[in-house]
Image (cartoon, rainbow, N blue to C red; front, side, top):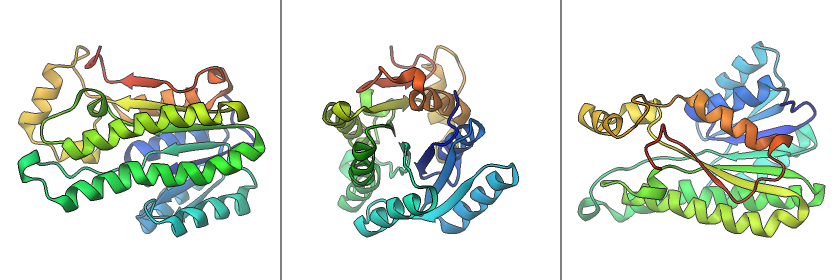
Length: 246
């Protein structure tokens, strides 16, 4: 997989899965835009990649703010002229049981995880349609496919992202833009470290491979979907969950 001459924008890429994806694409030759609401951490991640010889830039953006999103796309084009790969990775959790969930926690998760992906995809799609080429990869979740107690907001947002993936794939296919999603299972990140030990053990008990995934497990599949090898794949959801959902 060779991404030389291509520009990849990864949202929520200052750390965790997003950072691993950005580094994998950079390692294959892509110019990388590190985008995150955590400006200092995004700059640090970009500096880390630059130190390895990768062409990269950090652009602060709140994906729920249309003004920020438009600036993000404009600045990406200003610096690198093209936008070839978009990875919608920005996401949060606000877990609690449905009967205890506040409207604020519901709205916050849906805004960032789903509305944010919609806004960035909408802005990027206009560029890719003119180019008549592009790859959009959405980071959904196994929770969006099977549900999980205490995560009604997160499950709804990630299920919605799958719907967005399929609808957008049909709209953009005529311009040679593919849109796919990956659905990670239990991945060892800062986000999952917040889970209780009991919750972690419960997840592992249901995973046939008997281990959590890693950010690199996700990065490898995303890189494939962004490559020419995946040119005839669109509207699909790839599970990366160690067999949790079969």
